[in-house]
Image (cartoon, rainbow, N blue to C red):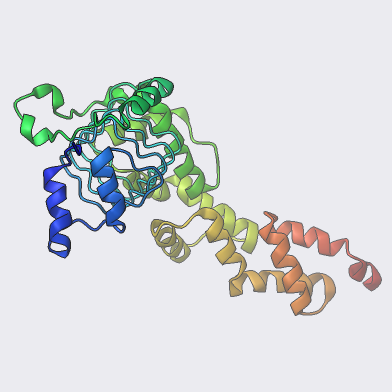
Length: 312
């Protein structure tokens, strides 16, 4: 007999455009509902809010923008899955495997995280379930009287076995925004507590951008490439740029290509060579700056060039 599927989600498939489900690959969704297994498949923007998906195998799946609000995700294997911008608010993540998962922009508020299960043991159980019709959909909404299924706000979960996953994400965000690995243990702890209290990774990212460390990172780029400090106008421009999901490395490349950066290179040429920067020099030193060097490094290189020696 065919294993039962989630009745509410099956109805979504039948109604098509009349529903809120927007899975880009309906066949993948059917496969998942029938088997509880959908590796490397496309379930982007699917609506599985409040459903019981426990023990599912979603390794490498694309769940970008998925609505998993209040879903039971206990023991789900999300290894290397894409959960960017997904809604996991109030979901149950006890024992879920999140190794290598993309959690950028994921709403992670009020989850019950609990403890991780051994990955090898979970894999053996999954293999036993496959082909036996043992995966079943059990909606949490049908068990509202069972308080043990209700998600809880647990700050202490960020000190448990799943803490490493969130620490990795926080370090990645900090590196992306500041181009530095020097996030303090105190900041990691405070941002982890903010996540536990309902903030999303997207909100944490904005906090880091607005922090003194975020401003200092932009100022370092200005000093390195333009030879001056960041002004208020530049702060507004580049803070907005980072808030649109861009990284500090991209910001640096944008400034290198700017008219002001070219003017800074031209000043070096005028001072040391007595002439304006030409196209060949622009290409050479733009490439040089893109390798992480500064305008001061350019100055030293030009000062030691044969052309400067010939002018003496």
